[in-house]
Image (cartoon, rainbow, N blue to C red):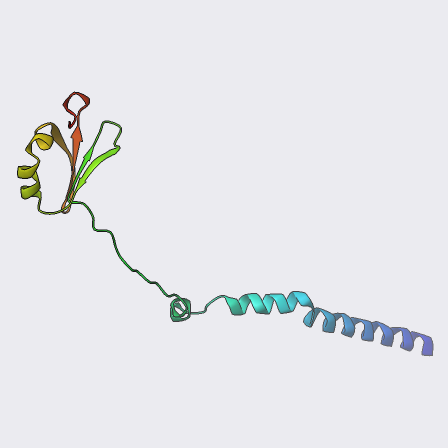
Length: 114
């Protein structure tokens, strides 16, 4: 009789140690660390981000490209003034695309800039 009670007590203690071991195992600690490293709100996510922009390159107002869409020239400034100043380049090209204040012109091979 004592033997059966002793064996059931050992099983109970072994089961308790097993549960205790699973509760405080490295896996549960790693899981807790992982869950703490994920920000719970958007403010926590943005809190550590720092962005420094020293100088932003201005976008060209006119871009000249060849048939392979390789950039041949970039012009900055007023488009009307640039067209007057570089008449020959724009006479030998055709408008390919327009986006907001930018225009892209296609230069054909036989009409390339000299």
